[in-house]
Image (cartoon, rainbow, N blue to C red; front, side):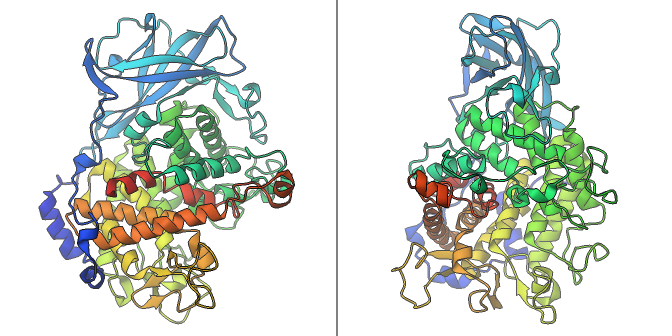
Length: 636
């Protein structure tokens, strides 16, 4: 393999400082660094502190965690029921699935276990530890009340289940669940007859996507957590009966073939993975159920050479394409492998079955690989000109291309995906340091406006970057770093944060320049729609304060993530910390703005209390910001 051992932190910091110059020197000169700890170096141990709540040394075991079983309506009481569930583990905590045992208040329970996911050594490609273990048992429920058990690992297992249980045999159609039975109707969605939940604190430790904190356990997070849960209920139509049908989220077509009747954008920016994040932060079976169902439904709607289900066009053969997006060319920004990976690691989804999860994950990567997206921006952009006329290249496309290969590597351990990731990172490092077209090195992925908005500025070279699209890219880059310890990713994240802080934000003013009198919007720090050192979106009339306000939460995540990355590289990120805090305050006012409480008459006329217009913003508000409270807390 071509992945050398990581150099020392100081050597890398020096190297990155040379190859990826910061773009914040002027602003730093005016920053009072004593007002912030953004200049204090971090080390990796501060990202993952040991947790005494889950690791202990007693009775010969290394640790334990509570597992709660939730039988659904289809489960018969007082008879044996086969149960299969999965438990994800933090990196390096479990190497032997046979050391896992299950206990109730009367003692050990016979089980069988199998590793169904691994943490991969980024240099050798070999499994380094178990990422998820599937547990099967026979349970007897005296009622449909939840049952609490204790899972232990690193010790003896004295009782073995005699006969194995296939996960698929323990699943039921959602029409038999007794809970939200009509959530999906155009495909038969299967789910566990018995769901198993884990504590939110445990789910945080497993870094399935990133570190998190349990809802309401961050001292300043009440406003963000309340908004997360409120808008999440709107996204799954758990709203007042007074809300009219026309104001519900239309995330499913009326019939299988009628894709035009669905609000496709409700799936844009990865609806299913955003719902997984709500479960990770709450540990609530309600959100586990919604996330699993969304993942299964989404997987069924990923094209597999037009052979999975009747397709709306006989000449479409775009493997990996999301079928709701009825277009004449593949649009991979709707295609994600992450929902299927999370369903596997957290719900123990079987390899076979209608969703064919591994094939779906590979299909999404194939969509990018098969000539559509090359990962490199050039004079003609990376968009294949043979497929359409508009030669798009944006940080959003880059984000989902990178994430597709990252997820495929996480799922399979296939070295080919690891090679793609290495190439992408190298290309981005070079792009930031040496922007194509002779543009200034602004610390972001500078590209021409005509490759971002193809019908604008076609004849005039204009360098731009997008803060909110870069936020989409920062999330998988952060995940990639946590999986590989490749500090080139830290350099990119720190540069992105420095770039946005220096050139990519502004203070909103109303038309009369009467700052601070009309709305929570005025006098707020907002991200530019597009920016560079040579282009100001506000001056050009491209940035709209009301629209830019909508991206304050995700850009806060980008800024904080870059601050953490910079501190790991011993950079002074004081200015970026201040800008991140100001952007976070704007995030709060924006989330508050869209909450419109009222009586039944008001809701019937205006829609849900927690309004989502358009629906896709739910996924950018709360998708890449899953760790926003944790990132904020790490700074304060």
